[in-house]
Image (cartoon, protein in one colour):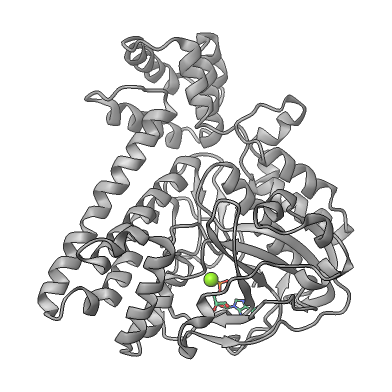
Length: 492
Ligand code: AMP
Ligand code: MG
């Protein structure tokens, strides 16, 4: 009995210039190391069937399931500001689309499944470390309620990949609302293929923004909708201390999901200029730059859509500028609303923005841990004795005292009970994030010792980020100085 995937593919019905048909390259000895059972069920797949040799072979690309129509998608992109007219899926193959339990169409893609016509000089493969990293961080983002691609499975291929040293090869099965990027639009725009841009825009509207089709100006509505989702997404990133690390236009999803987890990281102590990625030497993608970069990427999208906005070029530009002008307001209101929730405010008053900014400034000056400060503040909302725990996170604990007094004064004017405030704050301030030193330790155990128990444990903790889980309290701790991860790598 073969494993059934209920594929209903639409991307392959687009013109041939949108993709290259290519099958995954078979690998030696696939071994399933992780299957996301709840996600499998949500996708209409049978987890028991997938958890088998045949399942491992499918998820490693050794066997193509019935109904799959495997392709590598074409796209372009600005990488660190430099335009590359052809990138494309160089090491990923889209098996097909399924409709999930909520009626949402989802791509099922193998990442690391062998070369494609877009591989350039790459080997089309992925190493185990980055696969585990993407699995952990994407599923953590999902548990934090942040829009993201997800991870259905990870398999070891039984082959080595050559990086600086030989490393175990792996394939990640990624699930996404779609894999269409800002760079996908750029691919056609760069070729002056306006008909291609239009076909893609129509596909994106039908798939992600059906309401746009019902407006007088569907393409304008499309651009507005993508801008709104990106603004919300980046605000959510900042509110949990997430740094994507490679916000190139080819890593920017038009569906508004976090995509392409490479050298991404969560910050420990709060530092707006924080950069982890070894390749981001100018800090282009630093934590606090992310909103500006998202707008830069959206401006590239708007440029692609100009011919669809108006036949009159000047009019199209003027309109695009007006729409792009909505980003700042969207982002700021989402970010400020999120910050107000993080410090437990139920109402909006003059001075709130300054109050929260003063806390952030004090945290930056005192290397206070971003996640723990807000988590402990949540408990201090119930019991002022909790202030001791908050203070302890600041290099100069007194920096916290004056602020805490102002905060108590501000919240005392609201009618909510301390218990209500604590509960509300705990629901937005996670205890557990994928801390770099924990992720690195998991990868080290898996790669060097074939030990996946730490991986499983970390995943279990991160699946419930807002619960205390006293037995795993250590996972909430920031790194000791010797455990600090200073740099992260793409690992491609
Ligand atoms: P990324 O930095 O992962 O977003 O990838 C940027 C581009 O490089 C995309 O076109 C990828 O498909 C391609 N790429 C990354 N790693 C490899 C690899 N090992 N083999 C082939 N192409 C790759
Ligand atoms: Mg990418």
